[in-house]
Amino acid sequence: MIFTTAPSAAPDVEAAESYSQQIPSRLIANAEPKWLKRQQYVYRRTVLPIEGGRVLLRLTQTPIVEVDPSTRECEALGWDVRMPCDKVENLAKEMARRFLDLFSKADAGRLTESERSSWLKVLDHVDFVAFSVDRAAPHYLEGTLKRLEPVCIIEWHDGERRLPVTARGRDAVALAAPSNRQPAGGISRRPETAPLVRLPSAKP
Amino acid sequence: MPNRLPFYRRPPVVERVLSVYTSMPDEIFESRFEDWRTLVAPEYPAYEPLKQWLILVKDREQEEGLPLFDTMQPELRITPRFSKKTSKEGFDWSIRCPPGQLTVNMHSRPDQGLTRRYGNLRSEFGRWLPRWIENFSVESASKIAAHYVNLVNRHTVPKFVTEKGELLLGDVLTVFSRIPGQHEYLVAPFDCKATVQLQGDNKSLLRLTVSDWPDPGLAPAVRVDFIVEVLAPKVGASAEGIMALLDWCH
Image 1 (tube, rainbow over the protein chains, first blue to last red):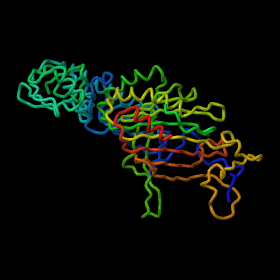
Image 2: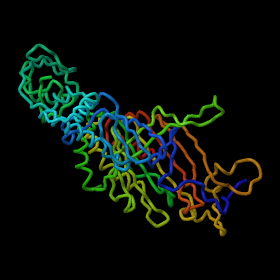
Image 3: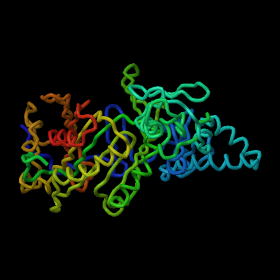
Image 4: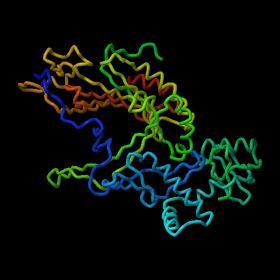
């Protein structure tokens, strides 16, 4: 029978800051990797918030972050965004900032040759059409509410039918068109992605 | 709070964690995170996201058990985390909120007289849960979990320490006391895991993990984790229902 630990049973583990805990077959290290070769990590994000989340930049590819152990810096591949590994929590913000910086310069026709190359690479990673729709100024669009329940259907002026699928979308329709066959003015065709208060552009 | 919660007189618990999970589209999370930050920041001013570099280690049996790094899917995970004190100030209460998850951590120091109870954590979690549900338009909980981290050493269980400073671990954790044979001492590393499916209407699991405590300064010390998970709870987005299940987990 065993009753006590050995008097000198100091556990043979690393210091707390590099302590690893294990969940099934996966190690979680609380320190940056120390390998000599560059290592790539998947950064699972599908959107980047802009303007505090009022506009979302949808990504078409999962970002890849490459770590350079010699400089302890990491880089979002295809974005030309580099930063120290210990500041990596700012990566999404810096990617969004990079996009906006290039976008504003492209919009003003002020891209340098290298920036133009970067801009083209960034465009490969984002849904630029959706971004353009989301950030466009809202405008009035007339449609007819065909039904609200169980599935909301609006027929827009050009005959297209769209289903606002979320609760917010249904709320928006209910507010704008309280009775059947009323104009559903100002309702986005993408209400599932837009807060009610913004009523963003309906034009895709 | 229910009238009769289980009460443990001197639990060696150093951290308690309550969590609720849901299915949440990234668009919802990202578009409402700043509103959530505005709510949380006044009471939890230290914002220190948890940065994790995850790697996968494969056990290649066909290569004589040689463990190899799987270079295909290393992952960078950044978890938003708000706390009342920064890690430098002595990390304390915290709220973690990655997409589809609300977690509240509460620390205790039973060796220094700071003995917080489940009731303390329950009150705090109960304040934030309805706000989280409303802010992110949560429709139903997909998992509920309670996690207790116990530190077993001479400070937290002094009655189980001999005059020579030996920890009577076999008396504290009976899992070690039935190993057959003649033995002198238990020697680190300690490593034991068990998972039990619990009785009841809910599909629930108790996971028990015994391992070394990573701080050599506290040795001899053992870490004992109790995690109770309720999978697919039938409570929808009812805060009362979720809290009742957390009481059951406790």
